Image 1 (cartoon, helix red, strand yellow):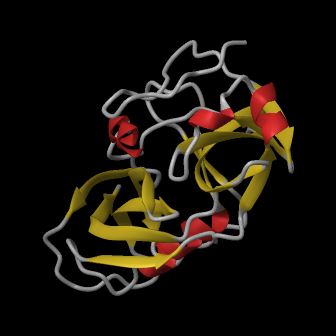
Image 2 (cartoon, helix red, strand yellow; image 1 turned 180 degrees about the horizontal axis):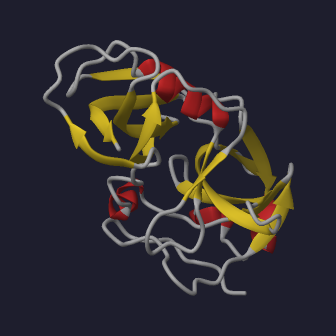
Length: 218
């Protein structure tokens, strides 16, 4: 398969019928694509209303309490860079112990949002009023992995062109609701490079969240 080349600022991320190079690592099937952070501006600003609601209202001025159906915008930050900006509907204070796989229109694979990240967003929105924002902890900088020069070359990438701050896509296998093996994308950022290897961080340091409004449910 072909390897995606480095994109320039403002270029869109890969869409339909994209070919990928795969390598296995710590439970991931890793697909490496060098991207600029601004390329994520092509992602839709909203995932949709999971709660089956009929709309969003920001007229209420009271702070969110646990159990309220709300819509939030969020930004995942890795190594000081915003790597994923979107939104979701949720019940404030709800928790999960499973990774979420978010579909984005025009993209081959869903994006992986870890359980810790969802839980931080869900609990972090409590107390906010529409329009207010807060920064919470992410899934952690300890989620990182080292690639050797040899493994980078095996992917068809030129190690000499990579630099700290470049964003990569990590592709992980999971079992979907039909019981079939599927692939999801996880953004990552290069945080260290030596003459022997490079280290990528795929856990988020922080998450910026904004309370958009209360969801009206039918």
